[in-house]
Length: 389
Ligand SMILES: *Cc1c(COP(=O)(O)O)cnc(C)c1O
Image (cartoon, rainbow, N blue to C red; front, side, top):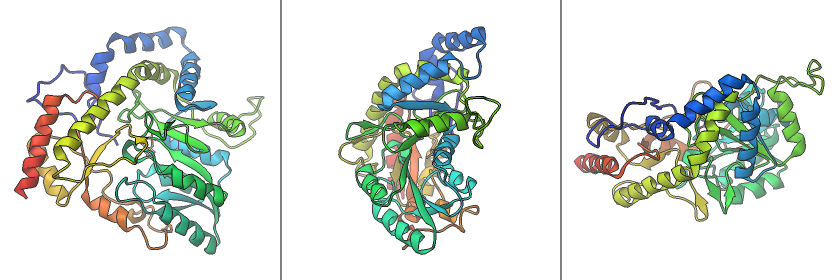
């Protein structure tokens, strides 16, 4: 997820170039408020763990309905901090979906543990609970210790926690929700961030709630895990900061980024509504010609991506590119087929759905400032490209 254009140019007209994610439009809307927020930090000078970080943490915890939210350096470190807090180590198996961004599995390998790739569901693209259960038994048979599952809320929709939570509980696994793409979404009224023993999110600029650089957060109701992660975030420091009690990292969120996020959070609920309106218009216009995303009953999406499925996806991408419409492929290769990951185990039966999705998915422009006339242009071109096949 990186196709972010932070240009602050004037709004293009409906016939002009189309942005995949238009951060410039949001910047124009927020205007001076961001400048004022940044200047406030420059004036007080508390660049590291300053007051804006605490204020943001309180607001994030309230949003997610949890006791603790901790601002961290990025979404990848957020995932790593959770596994470190649980003491994940060599010999442990951590179950991850095969169809996700590399960071989900990378952090497992950092700790010397074994990522085990599970398949995903056809309709939601999220972790398949049956594949997870099969992978747990196999890992145990292979002499690994099943320790945790990382469920990813892909493209903004929460994973099927109704079925994943009982599996994790029955097998004594910790549940880490990779909510990097889903902050702002919910399942059965539970907000992303509030689901899982620990949840991790990212504030990378192109995520639904993005800052102007790298940032992330972890969320939990577990007092001990929260205290451990706060310590690990600052090199594992103890109550005496020159007596480190654990091997940690530099995992702090910058005060400037927290100040920016506070401004962005204030318009975030409206942006989520605007994203939903964009998704509704796509579904209405394209539902007959391609496979549009489907939400589980009871879930809402933060619409980090609007990802459709179609055969001949590459031809569609090429035609849209010719017409000035940017698209992106998340993800063209399942992790288990990538060079760095192909020697790790997969669930029994492999990951055929992940392989199929990697061939057929394509993401269309999606952001809260995608206006109806511009979107109509995109829809027309998608339909024409499909019927030309
Ligand atoms: C973006 C992303 C991450 C990593 O977040 P960074 O802030 O870029 O480190 C992890 N998992 C998923 C699913 C993501 O999309």
